[in-house]
Image 1 (cartoon, rainbow, N blue to C red):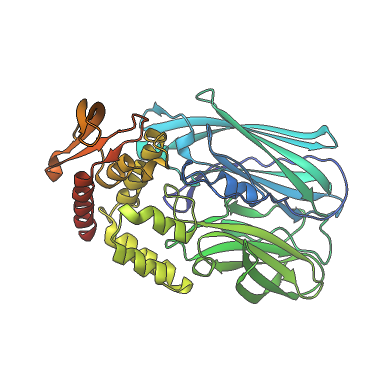
Image 2: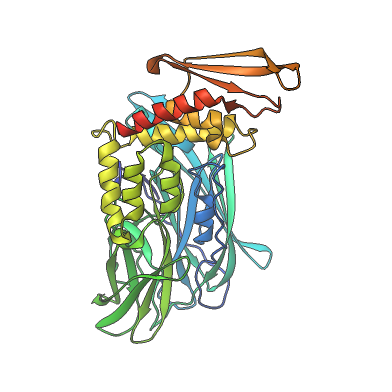
Length: 465
């Protein structure tokens, strides 16, 4: 099934395709998580691939960005488990062509289920995406959702994901080690992050859910993440304990709830408060208090699709050339439970176009950081923290750049040398800044006078924020 999502939440169901097949053997488990790596500050700032893979999801950032997830539900027989395979693709990764008054793209998804070195199940699908405006073709969020149901015997498998943009030659792939659980009386399903869901009432039917493969919320925008859970057995009501821990194992939030009977099984939804999670990966565990069976799912809280994938403190470091020191100090000193609201206040105060859903100021600012990292990568430090990088990030593209050789005399030694000089002209600020490369090693530094001039101008601009 392919779903086109709305501006922040899914709105349009584009196609429906559910398929059942069979295979393999063995015991309970969850998607295998991978070790979390810290995203380097000089890499692609918005690339969350390492985080998604650490969450136990399949993921690729380029050339076709996607996130794939596998969730499990009971079938009428404990010897077979229903696997929900979902894939998230941003429309920006697809090639759209004009088709009358709309825009059309096509993509293909291939799933390969391997066990013991051999392929035991295979699925190939091709879907068409139609959107009503060019703007919808450039989205970076979870805007296209593909899903299929498979019937799989319990056991250890490798899921191979291949996602192809049919309108070009671009293809991305990833693999995921998965332990398919045996779900019978006394057990619980995989927790499933959803946009919307209708609880099923019979084991021989399918959950009617619009899943969030990324299992992601945006800090300061989303109030909660809705998670759907099923339990199996003869009880009328069962109590469950919910707990959320961060990557270091610290308890962030805990609560208890009940799953009630709906027809032939028990189910319910739980809203996980985003403000209590903070930015980063949280692990949500659900435990049946009657049988002690449990399952878990990761939730990733980000600053937004076009903003850096970074912890809260790192984000404030990134903002050093965007916001005044007083604003950043207020954010840095805020208690964790107040940070979400203060971040909302910060976004509102600095958004140049509050009517637009995007924060163009931050989008452009981080675009300059990425450009500086690429353009000034040979400066000896991370590009955006080099002298030219700091000026570029703070002031933008200069109106004019002149480069020449200047004779510099050393009075002490009585020698003279030719030194490269760059002059950046900013007419809108009525200033010009001079960089020199005295060692002629490609490391350009502001002259002392220009550095003082730049810092004074940058301070004035930040004070206006």
